[in-house]
Image (tube, rainbow, N blue to C red):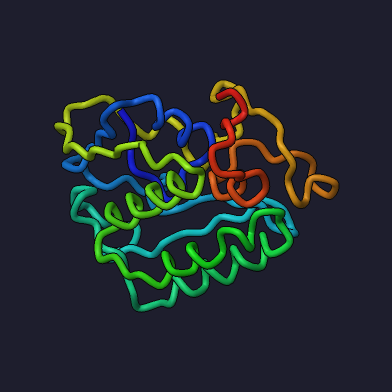
Length: 197
């Protein structure tokens, strides 16, 4: 069982492809400090966390399916500019830039809907058009679906972390298990196998 994350890390994304149904524990309370509203990309100064503001801030206690995105800040514009700056010289950036910019211009009221739209964008960008994302509301008694957190995403227990070309590797070394966006921008030839994961 998976949680819908904001451009999930590579291992979580590949794991989501193994399931016929993409279950969402939407009835459980929203969990702060998770990948549900954040992703980690590679930037010139190292790993960079992009975080989506949510209504109610860190104290929100509503079920995940009801969590609303706070649009008082131009987070979509800021995230798009940050991604364009970080990956502007990536081999596949110009191939995907237009579609990704359209995604960031499209508002979504609920966080869960935005995360699903991001997941579908990645599927299509990688040429996985036959992947059907069925979202089922699993009961809140289900096992935790946030197995990888922003605090431990690099822990080897979540591996293997296959190496691939990254833009700033010569400066920071290989950064494992970043957002699937990193893979898409650096390697993302449509239909290319996901490094044997």
